[in-house]
Length: 358
Image (cartoon, rainbow, N blue to C red; front, side):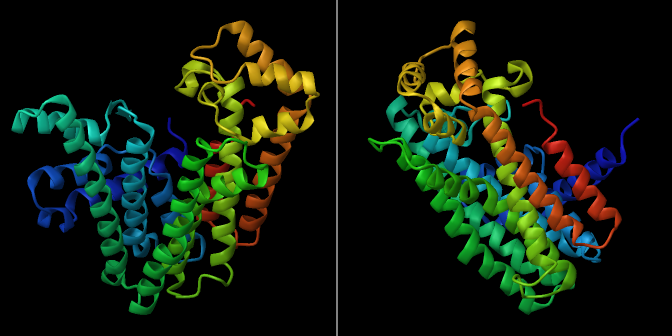
């Protein structure tokens, strides 16, 4: 038998799926290749975490979650344009078990126009960039149409402004930092990596909760509580989730984690976990850990050595504490809200996301 959390998640996801399927915006996109690509990722589903945060934040402030449906769908569509562009940047070929957007478009270009591999690759990349651009416009349009659900024009405009002035700036800045780190000759300071995480991962989660609460209260003010409390809850949840994800990348079950262990080490990513270790290790320990970076594959002995170094210097424990501190901050913000069904659902959702063996 499914839990209440699972039932409520299924209900919320169903509402978002129906909205995205029926929304008329994509029908006016030309040419057909672009129209199909714009709908590709949103129609594949996924966890729908961001729209769920919006819907339940609306309920947590006493609003009818249906009032936040446009805001919730806008958050999901916005999330998908970031995935399209991120896949291009990372040269990823698979997303949610299927070819990425630019790979699908590459195949289409080759089939429709008989393009050779180099030209087909350019066609796929060009159209995927345009796909993300149009998805961002779609998200803005859907958000402004929150007035269709009884949200005042002042609140709808404030949410749209917030999407541009806060969300776009912070998320793209975080992504740009992540890209730049790869090219720097020296490692970034830990504070800058934390800034990157809070932008790239936390900003959209914070915005999702924020605009859901704004819709529920029909207020254009995102600075006052309980809107600010829900925004801070989601931001801290996002940071804690990323720290747990970094830990799972070393200590998790590879089959459950979904990618090879120590992939961040293989890619040379400056995670908080790695930087904590460098701060704490002796010179010889740092040399040992550096020698284990950017290997094409990791044997069990390599993984065991990385784990040993992280544990002996206290880096693992430090990151676990940081994740717990952010989780506590998130829950403290929720505790400031009235005890309702939707506050309880947000608490359960946070616990489920952070319920990890790290």
